[in-house]
Image 1 (cartoon, chains in turn red, blue):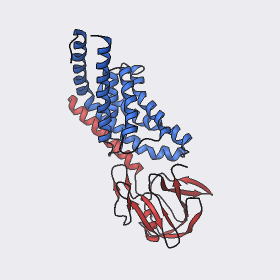
Image 2: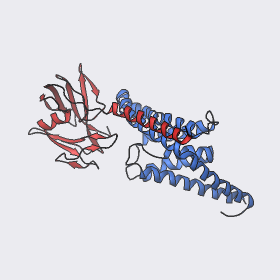
Image 3: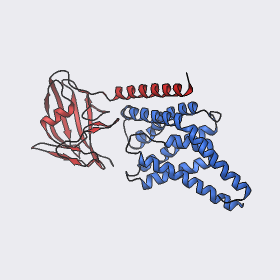
Image 4: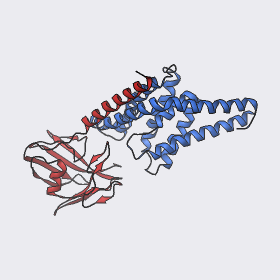
Length: 155
Length: 182
């Protein structure tokens, strides 16, 4: 095998292994059955602004569940508010929606991404466990408890 | 050639190399962790030596944080960012001094992609209270991307760039010895 062919082969193997590994960390999490999740949303001062059960159906992502029950404001590519939630991040490492704001008739939370943002937690036996992915890829099952918290980056 | 003239030429060389490092990182910053920074720092460390590379890294870290249109790095991260980049000239001047092949350096660059990410963990966990496990897991895809980028760029571009830079440096140093201007 010529050196250049070996070089191409090694490069191709490294790229393929890398892409496969990245895909392992970026798989989609959609519900494989219908069910309900228990959602809590807390505001700037950790006050509970929403508590309740949300129903989901087979094939839903966590974003779909929120979108069905609340009015969402997503982020554009430059993290500006997108009330229609038309923009979806679709680069190699950033995929899915970024939610900047969430509201219903009783409450409204709006963040600006630079100073404030919404974080997602799993509640396990009363303990908060920070999710490692965003709402489009957040894994969930029937009866899971999830917390959405308004965070200030400087506190 | 006087020591002052030599120093001025060294300053110019360091400034040009810093500018190249800064501009490419800025131009590629829309792509997550895809950049030529590791390739260039490895190249500088191998061709220009530890002292010049350290100065280039110092300038790069400061200018990137002051001038980046994407916003500066959180100040608490700065020493960790500087220490992470300094690992390359430190290791290439000591334990990996004898590694000169593009493949060997590409492998080092691959692992540096992960080490670079881990260098920010103390700042994230102890200074900004980010949860360790969540931070570690969230950063893995970015580390893999940087590792891939480092491996491919060093593997393919180190040799040709080293040849060009070494030739230019030889001409520059030859003229320095003869007292000519560049």
